Length: 233
Image (cartoon, rainbow, N blue to C red):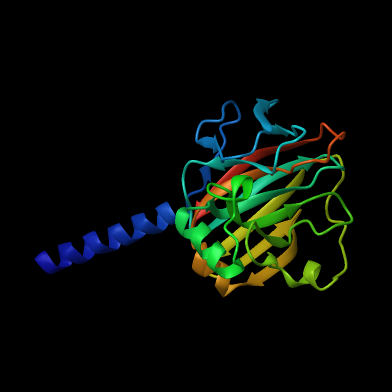
């Protein structure tokens, strides 16, 4: 009888864990920026407008990131985004500010210690590209890392696509499991990446919403995100 009770409890615990794993969690309540904070160095303006997180460029600012307070490892992420045709943006995954160890490793690798906006605190890691069509939206870039493009298609001169609807909302889906990252835009697969090196340095981290820096005398440009949710895997 005792053995049967233990088995029942074990099955119930497993079922509960599976249900918890399958649960989607909203990262944005549509009203406030609760659960989000600014990464270091960037100066772009982020606020909630009409139920969306609205990011606006500030001239002279480096790349800016509004990041989740919580960190994530393996997950499925969905959101909708609308970006100005003249603004490059992105969604960081498994990213973090550069630590002293990161800075020292970069100095050892390059012979130069990164300073200022590129040094301590610089938000870095895998980034899912967001830009107008035709372009490379959905492919994966190594923001402030040694790799540049992680996806081979932009790096090797692959053909740009037109999945983004300019001036409109576009749905992104990102699945990150181990070294495997997949992205979809409006239901169509874009990136199917395996990258062991970036996974070794960035196995987990924050989700970050980018407002790219702009050239002097340009802007302001904006980008908005809504319906942001995540499902841990």
